[in-house]
Image 1 (spheres, rainbow over the protein chains, first blue to last red):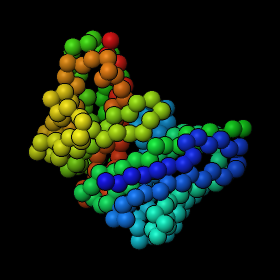
Image 2 (image 1 turned 90 degrees about the vertical axis):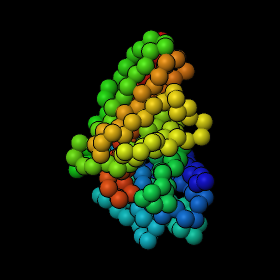
Image 3 (image 1 turned 45 degrees about the horizontal axis):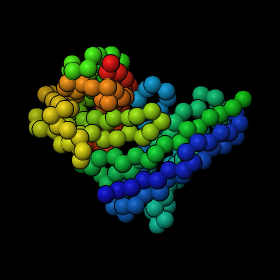
Image 4 (image 1 turned 180 degrees about the horizontal axis):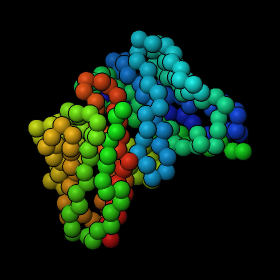
Length: 112
Length: 115
C-alpha cells in the first residue's frame, strides 16, 4: 500500500518568514495530493490540493509543488502569520475510489 | 460550499456504555464517508469506509462489532462505539467525499473520554 513520509515533524519560524514542509510517497499510481491544516481540537481543513498532471499550484500565500519523478511534493507558506500556527498534514491517493493516506504531520509554530 | 457537521464535539461516558457519533454532510450528498481515529500528537488513522446503503469496509485491526457504522442516507453516517472502555478514549473524526470529486471534507471531530 501507499506510504507517505513527512518532514519536518516540528517547524518554528518567525512571523513574515517562509515555511516549507516536504512529503514523499511510495505508490507511483498516486495522483491526488491534498494538504490539510488542523488546529487544536478541530478536524482537518483542506487548504490546497494538487493533481499529478500539474507541477505547481498557488493560492495567495500558499503553494504546493509536485515532482512526480522523485515522488515528492511540498507545501510552501510565505509571509507567515501567527494564525498559520497549526499541524499540517500531507496526503496522497490514487483517485476518487481510493482512500487518503496521510503523512505523520508537521507542527508549525509562527513566533512574533 | 462543503460543510460536514459532526456531533457531539465531546462526550464523557462510563465504561461499558455505548456512544453514538453522527456525521452529516450539510450542503452536498456524500456517497462515501470515512471514519478516522486520532491519538494525541499523531496522524489520522483510517478506521472504516462507509458507502450509502451498503456495509462499511473496515481497516485491518479495527473490530467491526466494536465500532458499528451505519450510512443510512446520502447525508448521514453514524459511528457507534459499543461497550466502550478507557482504551477507546480518543478523538474520532469523520470525512465525506463530495460526489466523484477526490476532495475530502472533514467534520470537527468528537473527543470521547471513557471513565
